[in-house]
Image (tube, rainbow, N blue to C red):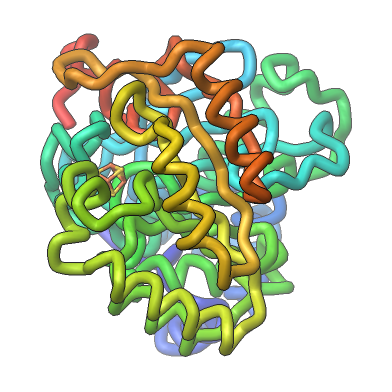
Length: 368
Ligand code: SF4
């Protein structure tokens, strides 16, 4: 079995072609099929020599994932994939960009939420994925295959997304916000971004990509040094050290003070705005003192605070705030001069809301 070609940059694939006795431009031909038509079956790449296609057929595995199930709800479709070694990961197609507050023309936007790990080692207390534990990091091709298969799924089901346009690429934004902590698999995540943004391939703008972190200090440092205009989202969930440590155990070793310091360094170096994610949990972080804590903590930043009402997770004893409570909290934020947006908990009934990946398949007897 030949695999791993999808993990190669165009330059690496060109070099690889020469080692196989093929001209380097074969790589460009393959990339064009994969990244503009989402075709990964070598036999269908009709501008490659038939003899070579026949030799590779049955041997070359470009896609290391298989789509094994999908569930849809009004504004989200959740895809379940299986890796070659039997792990299950999830990807969510959202009809609107939920990761940022930008909604210039929401009707045209499809956001893809992708996974960077199978499971997650961080165990945030509100999170279904964290509850499932950690299997392993995803390879570059496993991260990229989620994009190709999601594009193919959209092409095959345009009606689900209200699409009638015939533009080849349908996804406008990608957020690394699915299963796993992207900064714990940074090399693979970084390489996947360099492939997704390559002008001769998928050609997605860096600004259309968001990395979401639970607050891994070292990872944010590397991200700052990398200095590409990818957006950064940081899970905050509490403006207080103790409160945050209760919700995000990793923040005991990646403290709130260090986080604030490294984010200031990031903003000083890049000038880019930070999205802070805040899952609002009834009686936990929805008090007036939380608003005051947020006001002080956010003061030095250019930021947006994204409020996400907690999605219930079976077996986790946290409560969703009432609609009235969410509105009151939001009003307090506004009165305190905090730049906040309220994210609709889309995908709730299919367990595709934040912190819910991994939930539903469990009940469908698929082990993650
Ligand atoms: S919220 Fe994110 S970082 Fe925390 S356990 Fe879940 S997947 Fe991991």
